[in-house]
Image (cartoon, rainbow, N blue to C red):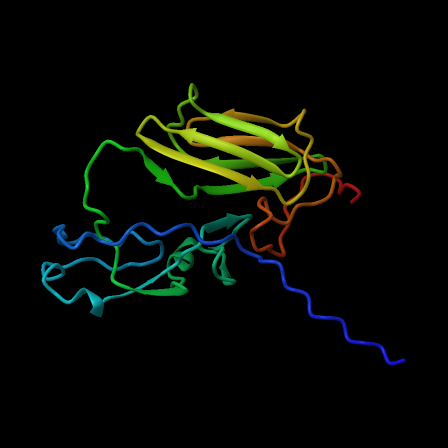
Length: 224
């Protein structure tokens, strides 16, 4: 009896879903001159004629994903391209196109805190631990919440004294010992010491990031 071909398996997503986009510009809101587009990777700047010009003629070329800074490699979760120099990273063209730029959003000015969709992060490792840094200044230690609730995830809720908030559940590349992992809030970053369960090398910090060919490891390699 001839063998039947196996049905194709769906590929797991290599990148996280893009964060929800901010609302569009309020049509009644005035757009100041020299206002930069708020979407990541778009370098458009408003002119004195922006408010009076047809907005549907605008094309916003931007990155819906998160920036990645990992062991010298720089890029975006929504794109596969990686570069080494920061100047080259800033030149990576957006991978999504959308009508109308986002210069002012709703145009409302209030005292609500600014929600940060992402912060820059990096890490290095030894055979037994991963030392990860989340770069965020002015974290309020009295309100910070860092929860090692799962061997494969870390939840953070970080408020700053200048009214910003970064809240995320970080899917980890490997598994950790939640009873031994620790955190430290420093002047310009939050440092996570993640104790490995298996000694395997991590190619990324987050499980939803593209891996690189570089692995910075100090000491002798552990057994996977």
